[in-house]
Length: 125
Image 1 (spheres, rainbow, N blue to C red):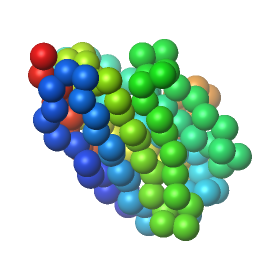
Image 2: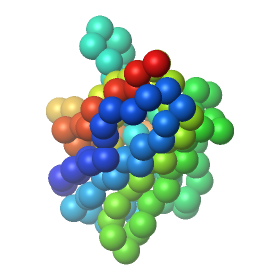
Image 3: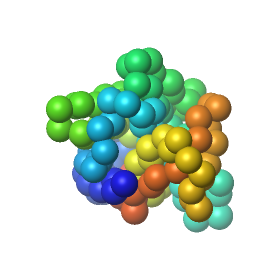
């Protein structure tokens, strides 16, 4: 399984970015999510979309971020609006794994075992 993120960059406060994650698996059968991490802080979940299209957002993402997917293109998206400096982080795409992997991480009861390399988002004030 390979996940490749793109779309990160540098914006000023209030700006928008759209992250993309191209997967080598059929994402319609797995829960897919976005996470973020900054140096010295724990990884945190941002949003997830399950195989039944149900959505989950962390509180800081509600109303500003939108997760979506294109099953035909095996691509996951994260539209981020009204960005704030505290959103600055490396953003990672992750896929649910049915088997244990070396990089496994559980969030909202889902075992995410496959990860992309991340795309940097920097928001300046």
